[in-house]
Length: 293
Image (cartoon, rainbow, N blue to C red; front, side, top):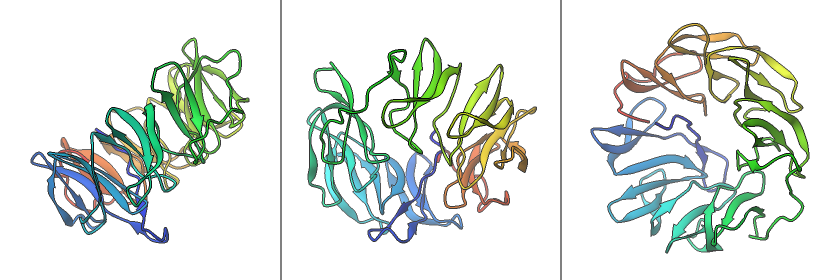
């Protein structure tokens, strides 16, 4: 189940598209912030809106729709990613490339794998499996980003807040865009940065560090998610999730079976084995009735 809701902006990037994908009786549709069904559940699969467009799957492949449900990019791709920085990674004829919002290839399909653009770069793998590397928005290889000698693998392939998560010998740390180690590899488990904080596991509890590795929220949690809109899902000493603020205080009590990241002041939560959405006060926008979000 994917719980990270990331809403998009429209073509002029001024107004968020506040629609959320939900699964109802085996098909996907989209609801608004009030829980009203805006796009009927007619899709085999559906992803959140990003930059005014959402990826949906019908029987003959993936394509992109706008907030009215109108198909904007036909494509019929075999696999697809969300738009980021005006480009989206798509799989065509067994190779990944990047299209623009007109549906034309901005970077030709030449990669075995390809991530979304983040902080002006994307992480790709060569078609012959021989190499991983970063490219810029023109598709050129970024030569200046290398890994320190003691690091084997870029674990989190997208830079967030100028940091990427890396690992070696099952320990995690973070590098900057020049490949410099910013946070030493010392954590058994970790998550990427979000809202200037990253979750790390210290001993058997999760806490959060800031950009330079300082502990911002003491390790007091059994499980956590990423920060969004200043709140993060967390579970301390119960079997249920609530939400903490950047001081590590619960502002929404532990009451949910599962909980996702806030975006546009909404977050997905599970109650009684069904999903709904809450606002930042913890109020449900509709009854818990969705199979997946």
